[in-house]
Length: 588
Image 1 (cartoon, helix red, strand yellow):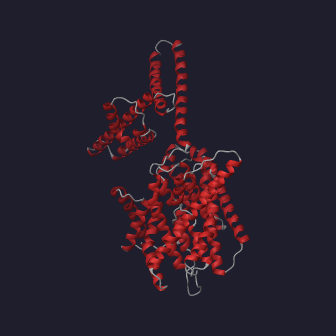
Image 2 (cartoon, rainbow, N blue to C red):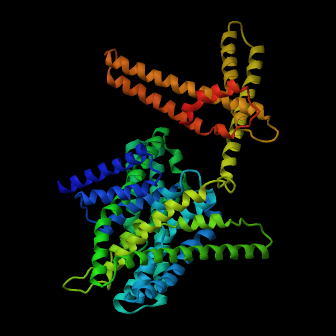
Image 3 (cartoon, rainbow, N blue to C red):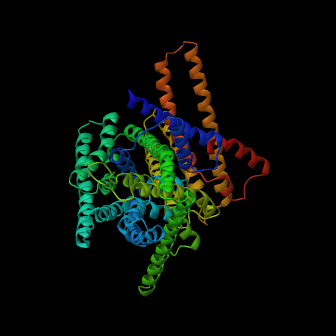
């Protein structure tokens, strides 16, 4: 009952934290609000223990699996060199440089222990990175690099941490052993993730071809896949994190989800969105729940060592500054090297601005992986002495997590203000071009149908004119719909701005009216239930049909450009204002 109560309380606090952010319109990123709510809940008496192994197993595999599945494969391939430099080279560079700095700043921390602390803080957190930069305002290239780095740098950081801990505990370190272990853990984890995911996709393909496409069963099995991959990799001492990432990419590469029914895909998307939101929120809540205990522990450490707690705060800020400086320098060196190689090879390369480099620097936040790893350090018992200075390292790591999140929440909005989002992202242009091409394909098919219908009219027997007229009317309606799509999306110079603007405003007005009609239909449906003209089962069936229609309309509405981006060669001011007013429900 105690575990059940804690679970229900945690989920309740999760919903409250999101509600506070939505209703209060607080200009603070949701992760920081969730950390604050978690800290308040801990002070109010909600105490939840933090088991690092259970935490890594329960939360990390599904989140990294889902992030890897959503990672664009083409951009990942194009940016692989940059991502590997950030995920591997930067981790090693940070471990060495920041380790020496920590030992210099706080001499009682031995050098191997300083390396362990620097290693555990070197990986960026995929959850917090996504929460900070998502929303469509950051350049797509930066988003892809940061996501790719966060997906891959956990393995390199944890390997460095493992050998730094071993060196601190035993005083022994072997570079050859460390390199061999890193290769085994990384390659083994990737291979296990690919093999397990491919086998699961083949099994699902067999089930789908034989007609066993039950949405709840498929979704449950798909959700269990990242846990299974992680456990198998962990059992053979390989990287379960890289295994989950490789599994998500493999499932996407096989395209098995495209073979499932539409209902299965829609429900799976809803379930995964819910899991992502809940797990992301719970992770930050758990960080907040540990915060009061970590703060009190840090103050006790400072008093026991005869130093001021302010020195501990200054040490945390100094470590955060040094890690940000190291990250900035590494990114600048990587860009300079890429520019030099591109010059020698006579190739063009994208050179980011200083503002973009600063954005990538402050977006390197720390989070759940750092806290889970540092809490896994051996605790002193009667049988063993434990890790030297463990409590101090835990306090410093927690402080750096909070300071990195605070720095990102303050700096990222300012850096993103006025920054162009689509300059490096060809996918936005490709999306419209593909929609135009598909609409033109449909128009060509309809013209072919018209020609065949005209031939049928010539050879038609008496009495068949009514059927042919109905087909002509249907073809005319569909032609108007697809031609309107082409007019709305074609923003090339050959397209007339006035025609495109009129088509967009006409579509916005139409969608707004459709949403109003659906709302009135729902009201009438609910009224008939209250009047007992129909039962609630009928209401549920029709509401589900209306949900699918409304979802399709929402997807169509999101594909429309914003009103402020439309050309100004539009209808008169009165007509324009009325069209935008009627289209307002579409954008909301």
